[in-house]
Amino acid sequence: MTLAESYISEQDAAGRRVMEAIIRASYRGILGREPEKSVQSFFIEPYFVSDLEAAFAERIKGFVESIEFQEIMRARMGENPADYPPNSWVRAKVDGLLLHVDVGDRGVSRNCVFGGYEPVETAFVDRSVKPGMTFVDIGANIGWFSTRAARLVGTEGKVISFEPREQTYKALCRSMHDNGFDAYFESYNAALGSEPGEMMIGWSHNSDNPGGTWTLPEGWLQEQFRNAGAELQPTPVLTLDDVIRDRKVDFIKIDIEGAEPLAFDGASNVLRSSRPLIMSELNPRALQAVSNRTPKGFVDYMKDHGYRCEHLTLEGIGAPYDGEELPNNYEMINVVFTPN
Image 1 (tube, rainbow, N blue to C red):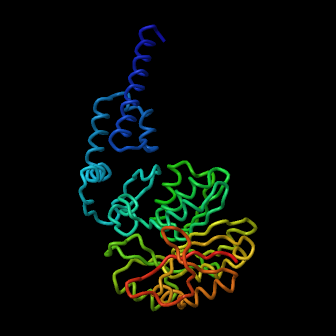
Image 2: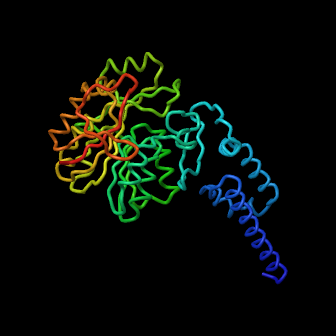
Image 3: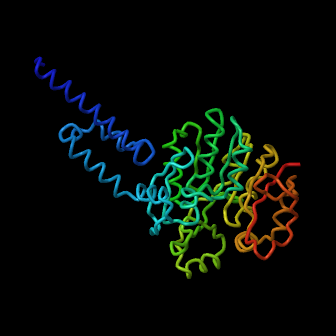
């Protein structure tokens, strides 16, 4: 290489470093996060060197036109989120964590980004999960609790997540990867039940909660969902006992729309040997439809496994709950099952 060629090469390298710094700074300043992996590879691709100005202009244009940036600006100006159709996926930084969210989903994703998603359960997880614990997330959805738990348990702990719907499972895995949690994260694109097999799941794109997924073990329930325009998908079924084997579990979060007793039917060894703390949703209507159990039947079932049931409040564990009928203005409650 001649002296002139060496000088030009050094100038190109310097230019690349400057432009990389500008692009990284733009991500931080405009979107409030680091660039994704695909953009980082863009720094070393040939076209990045050949036309820096055009490439950078295209990147800035992408910022301004993105759903992510538009929602950031709306939030800063105090405006309500815009309406988006389901499958409007973006990556957002929420409470210091990167989360892949569907801003067309008002039930889970939008509440994660704009505040108000399950504050009682979130506060309980933040208080209860400690470094080194093994946290099991049954019905992980896009990963709100899995990502938080991974940050809390740290590298000496473990997060094991189950999400049966393929699309939300992929978002969960991308979020865990982007936050650097892969080394202590284990995931299953499957439902949990009393024995291994296959089961139908369903969800509706026509509702405000397209991310909500139901387990549909009975034919009549599948037909009801199909007639309502829902999408159905077969998914593998595992048992928690088979997945965990001889490992110890410290905390279980479970929210699977009334299929909770079905999952615990396949977890008797885990409940007996690990004695984990369990945070669960309790939805009477869903319990009856999916598991053919009343709230009292579910609470008594857990009592038989040596667990007491208590209300979960913003302050923490509250009064005992024995399965009594909920007040008319309550569709569901959150409870904690604590080992005796």
